[in-house]
Length: 276
Image 1: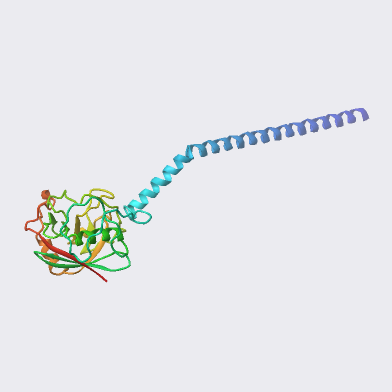
Image 2 (image 1 turned 90 degrees about the horizontal axis):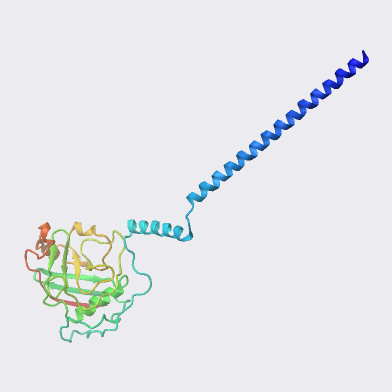
């Protein structure tokens, strides 16, 4: 009896030991599977991260730059150039208007105005007169160019070659063809979106930094919506209710004409400028 009991106890111990060993093995298997699963998850995550990361710093820079350009385009279209305006080496015209008329120059003018002063242009046309305050604080280079042309009698007796009703009246080409200019170009001084308004004076151009002598005056609501790609340098303060509507009325409304020529001649008799 004693021997049988001891044998049964031994068998029970072996059975419990065997079951314990099986449990330990199962736990090891589970832990190994968990580690493998975690490792696979980590590998998948790393691969996913690599596929989403730019291939190089250049790629990241390109994406950032393109995003910035898109934002700038939506808000301001084209910002004013950084740094001070670079003036030319051309001589300044006599400030008292005593010189002869000059309509061709070898170079853009050097600084001929005092940017701290206010300059006002009096434009006399066959449709009436306009008084325009020039913004030398915001666009000193463009104002300097315009004032020097005025003092050179550049615009006197010229014909405005283009006018579109409720849009703009464009002048400043002595040849009245739309392709004439002073023989040089100056840099842009661009406004922000929404700064054009009725009576704004701005430079016409054929692309960035191609300003010469041609300018336009916004004569209607359509012109106010222009993108800020044109140097803004003045504002009509007298003649908004009289002369400007008369100029606008002379515009060519035929869409195929692009405003050329106006239906009535628009002639600049003279332009003078004063400073204060």
